[in-house]
Length: 81
Image (cartoon, rainbow, N blue to C red; front, side, top):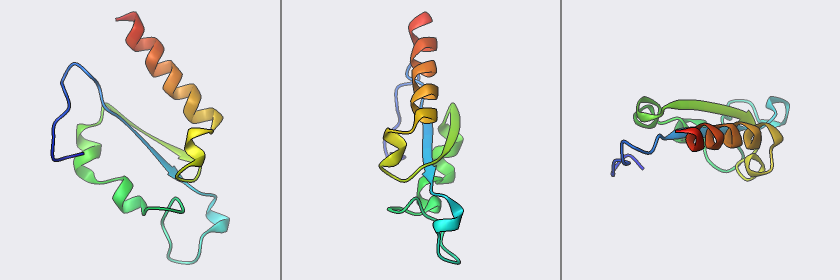
């Protein structure tokens, strides 16, 4: 994503998932598929309008009630502009 810039008219929001810490192995930092380090690349964080983290797996974030609520609020705000 950092190789190509997004249009400045379209804000970029970074959503990332992290699973319940009790399910992780010692020393692990992953959403179950990719590492948090990869999800939270500083280049992406610096270009994001806002960063949101959710207690969800890589795919689980798509069905997470909290992430859907935030996503819909972002869409509502965009529709008002």
